Image (cartoon, rainbow, N blue to C red; front, side, top):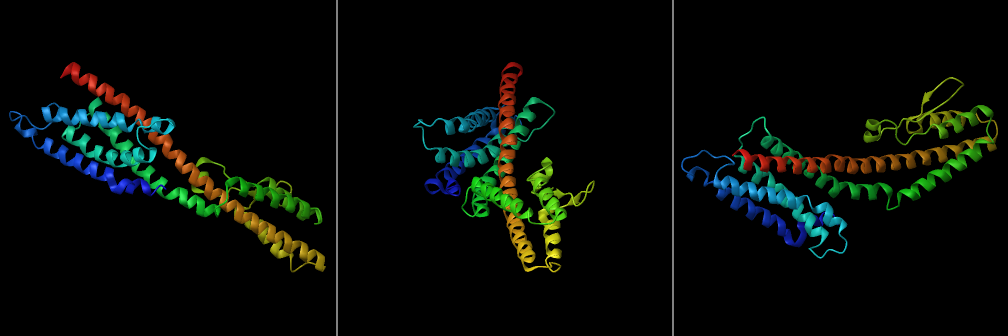
Length: 291
């Protein structure tokens, strides 16, 4: 689905973007014809390119509105998104040609810089939406997140039930491992998909149980020391449950990390787009007032 955005209607908007860039370059070439005035946004070609760029920015920012206009007949969301990608990319060149690469510490350069940030973050978002959804589906093995959470709850219940047949020390450590499991802790560890799980091997002690490694090692060491066959079978059953729990937690952490990356992109892209619209407004007003 997402890969179709780039090839939509046989690359319709790639062709439109390329034609738009060709026209913009031709317009820019007339900069030096304006009575010998050096290239800048105040020449008539500069005004044309600036108007074109401003209209593109406003139109591109309307994608979010179009996505929520379920009864709209102004093209499909897929077509709008494809145009958003290619025309947004061409805007990078159109906006730079408008400014003639003349930068300074002013509102005009701020508007250009915000435009670049929005477009670059758009590149990141395009990559994310082309790759992360499929990665999430593959990671979940075509199952829903709720399904994995339910399996985790079932495994935890089975471990708690089996722990009641263990000695008090092992039971305490098993319950401690369940209670101290963390799907995410700090923002950066969550973003990196790191496990912050711990357990309490004894009163007042804390041990690192990342990826259930401490608990798996503990159970593995106890199996050879089992005095009865029934005890060995119980430990082996617990080993299988904890190993499965490790797999489930890994799936959930990777899924949460991918979901966080998608949300993090929106946190950057959307507010920066709003800031760009404000800076663009100030840029236009200041041009008409002082130029």
